[in-house]
Length: 176
Image (cartoon, rainbow, N blue to C red; front, side, top):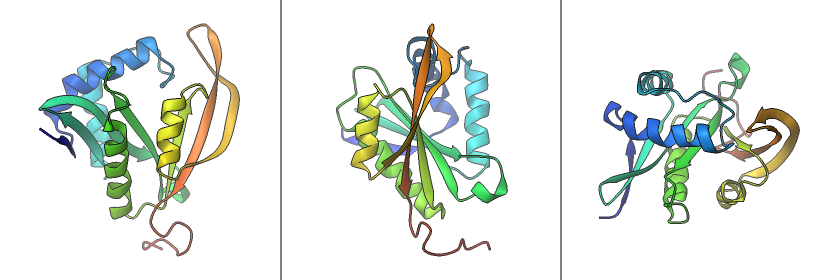
C-alpha cells in the first residue's frame, strides 16, 4: 500500500501518544519533561482542531508512521496568520519520505486556510534531519537561541526557521 496522509481522528490518539512519549523521554525535539497521557493528547488534538488548524497522520501499509500539525505561533491577535509546525515520524521510519509527505500536506492545508507564515522551532542544531527537511520545503534559518532550555542535564539551543505561505506579506489578510 502507498503512503497515505490523512486527517487525524480520535482513533489515532494512542499511536500519537506513544510516539510523543518517546520524544519526551528520550529526545530534545520537545522540551516537555512529563509524558502526557492519552487523555491529555486527545485534549491537545481537539484544541488544535477546534481552533481550525490541521492535524494529520501518515500511514504506510495500514500502519501509523507519523503525525504533523500546525498551531498558533503566538496567542496575540497580530500573529493570527502565522503558524508553528510540528512533525514527528516513528523511529526506524525516518528517511523514507514520511516527514516530507506530512510537511507537504501540512503546508498545503495551512495555505488553504489562509495562513501566511510557518515557523519551525527545532530543538537543537544537531537535529540535522529536521533542519534538512525544513530546508527542502523552503524554510530559511532566522536564528538560533543559545541555551534557552534545560533538559537531559544540559542546556539546549533552539533553531528557528521560517517559510512564507501563500501570498506571504504581499497582501493584507482577508479578514482586515
